[in-house]
Amino acid sequence: MQLDTNNAISGDVGPVANAGLLHSSPYHLLQYPSKSSLGKPKTRILLSCDTGNDLRFVTEFCERYSQHFRCTIVEPFNRQQANRMDYVFWLATERALARNTVLVVLVGPTTAGCANVDWDIAASLTDSGLGTAGLVGVLLPNYFESGSEAKSLRNIPHRLALNTSNGYATVYTWQHVMSSLFNAESMVRRALENSRSSQFQPNNRPPLRKP
View 1 (cartoon, rainbow, N blue to C red):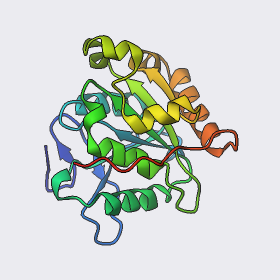
View 2: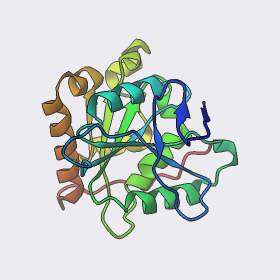
View 3: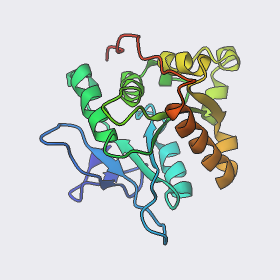
């Protein structure tokens, strides 16, 4: 996966445009072009996944819902050379530019071991002045092909699991989310409500996962 000269990902992700940089940050937010005839959608969906295996699901989600949400993803980067704390600070600050943001974690069989996903979740749960983001997990079809652990939800990212158990986050299946706009909008609405409710407090205590 490489950026072409137009700052769009070439390959499986589809036509994604550079959504702007924060100062001289080495990280880029990529935004899928909106097809909305009603102006730019207000709610930003920040997608997080195992970028080595599951980017095709990002494409499918964006093609289905970019008319209704501002679909973005962090451009794949070299995690071995990244500073975990700097990345989380950058993304938390960048995310705060949009008041209505929901992090959608696309969970496949290898997502739990991905440092970038853990960092994305940590950033979404960091209050940089405008509150925390909504958080949901979406279990991909290939997740259920990964064996018995999938049935007990043991193989989902630890930080996501903690926030699911305390009620802050909710987990859905890919089939449910993709079956109708109503389901997708309900998922987003509930995530935003939870992030703004004093009833649910995000758990962001675990240390950041090492690359």
